Length: 78
Image (cartoon, rainbow, N blue to C red):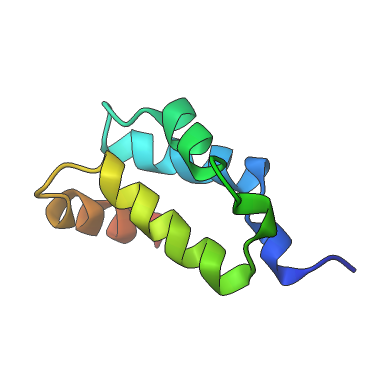
């Protein structure tokens, strides 16, 4: 059994990035993933990876992203 922090994998970010790109077409999935893995990502623990993902995601979203994000969360429940 792997570590819980390992759920944040390239496969996870590929799938997550695709989901974001579906509601935010100018989202640069590959640059997002590259930015996630910059620096000491592999040494980060689970909560630090979650926080880091949030910070990086905010860098790639428009200033008014809460509205598109609401559409995404609603559509992901169907």
